[in-house]
Structures are given as C-alpha cells and as structure tokens.
Length: 127
Image (tube, rainbow, N blue to C red; front, top):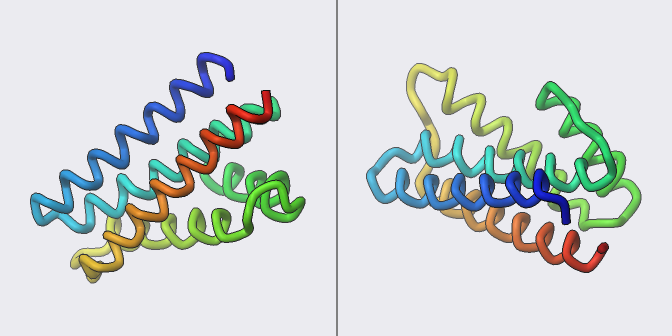
C-alpha cells in the first residue's frame, strides 16, 4: 500500500473518531458529516489503488460504483452507504435545521467504520 493511500485511510480513521466525539458532544449533524467524510476518504483510497483520482465528490461516487460495486469487487452496500451518507451530509450542512436522528448517525458511524475496515483488509491483501 503506498504512502498516499495509507494517509487517506488514516484520515478516514480520524474522521470516524471525530464523528464519535461530535456525537458525544450532542452535535449529530456535524457527526454525520464527519462519518460521510470517513467513507469518502476510504473510497478515494480504494480508487487511488487503481490509479484513479477525482476532483469532485460525484466523480468519486460514480467511479467507486463502477470499479468496486458493479464489478462485485466489494459488496454493493458500500456504494449505497457512500451515496446515502452524502445525502445526509448535504442535508446537515446546508439545511437550516438539522433533522438528523441520533440513532441514524450512530448507524452511519458504524457503517463508516465497517467500510474502512473492509477497505484496509482489501488493500492489504491486494498487494
């Protein structure tokens, strides 16, 4: 695994920890955004393993779906989680009043953790 991929995965781990801390502090909307970014950095790391880089979130979302979900390399649920967490982040970041439910954020953090762990195992064994 190259250094840049490792840095992205470490950044994803920090985003998960930040999400957990923000949720403990009662900031569910901020926690949801950090959980999304954990998934986003994880997807970026996986794509970088294939030599792919993107400037926009939509590019990462689409390429992850094309290269990992549609091909069956990873379970399609990870692509769905990435897209759903993006929708939640948009709602939380740009909505005047956050309607995010704490239980939903707990699940989002769990999903981001699972996605990250799966990516680490995949990237370690693909070497």
